[in-house]
Amino acid sequence: MRPIFTILIFLLLPGLAFAEEGNTHRLDLTGHWVGVTSLAIFIFAYVLVMAEEFTHLRKSKPVILAAGIIWALIAIIYNQHGLPAAAEHAVRHNLLEYAELMLFLLVAMTYINAMDERGVFDALRAWLIRKGFSLRKLFWITGLLAFLISPVADNLTTALLMCAVVLAVGGDNDKFVMLSCINIVVGANAGGAFSPFGDITTLMVWQKAIETAQGQIGFWPFFKLFLPALVNWLVPAVIMSLAVPNAQPSGGGASAQMKRGARRIIGLFLLTIVTAVSFHNFLHMPPVIGMLTGLSFLQFFGYYLKKTAHKEVPKDVEREGQMGSPVAFDVFQKIARAEWDTLFFFYGVVLCVGGLGFIGYLSLASQVMYVDWGATPANVTVGVLSSIVDNIPVMFAVLTMMPDMSMGQWLLVTLTAGVGGSLLSIGSAAGVALMGQARGKYTFFGHLKWTPAIALGYAASIVVHMWVNSSIF
Image (cartoon, rainbow, N blue to C red; front, side, top):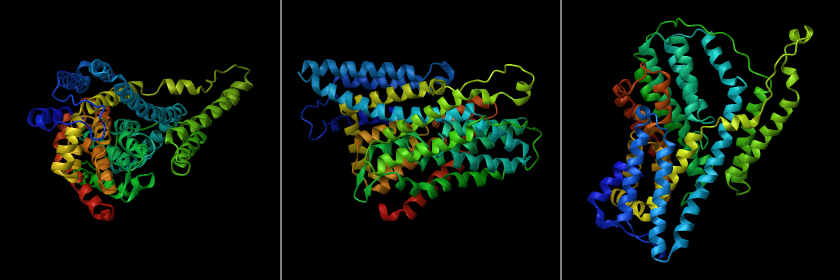
């Protein structure tokens, strides 16, 4: 739930709060001191999250603490009313939802880390640098690759990889770096919006297996968003490309070789994706079961690499009788390198938003947004708010509200929540990460200057989606 929006609802429409229909064991605490206190705690925690760049306090810490306090307050009130089982059931439900998504993301992160350790991304970066493309061509190539890689890898990893290329070949040209970083952020966020694997928000919607009048939102319906997502990236990219200097970069790049097994790990990752989709579509099992099965593929292959690590010793070293020092592949090191701060931040958000929903605030928000406003204005607003605060809590809030919408509207909110974060540099993990990687060259105000062009792409993508997918609205 977006803090700003929650405050407005609470202050302006307190009389609309109501308990969830059909649940006689849920208390309406929106006007109770527990509800007000919980809301204030979450807002304060999220202020600390937004200030991470300045405080250097990891974003997981405040939301984990807030989650514990919120549910403790809820438990106190429910125990006083003789309803301890209701609160316990609700928090267990939230934990189950988090566990499925966390394990799914953990497997994906492990594969990305394994490919990184095997030199896959270094080889790609070196190849791009050696090709000697002009700055304008590199602007288009890095943006296009960000759009195409993020549906498989996460948008954060993709953005960091492409930014490294930009800094290596045009680091002394601040204007080129600024425009390319904006292009990469927009491309990575847009690419992640049409694939269940590209962004946490799309993954959340896919795993929810939402039933609509047009059928279930399974794996393939997300690809209806490909054209709108492409338009979302292309419109600002075309406008910004006119300002990119058409000069040759001064930087060069040394070659980088992938380690043994790199290509096979790429293949295993693709096989894991197929396994997860198959478990969901054909066996009607949670996708996370397929992902964890795919993790075993990497574990067995890691065992093979460990047992044959001596093959990594160069032949000339062997001939000279030297020992060499091959580093054995260890899959648990790749798991350890996962973005644990992000995973625990996700835990805190899920439990906090789940607690606010159990208190009754999400029912209130659902009434105002999806009944009074209508689905389309509400879903467009969700995307705009994503530029201010991370899109994870708002998408979880929408899924908790579970408004009765068509498939077209569910895909619309998936699109807007995914690409809306591009409007500001602080609106997505990719933007925040690149501000750190290209410090002083890619800035908040530099991005803000091009927000009108990005907003034009945002509006165009919504129009295109409502046009090409009109049959499912």
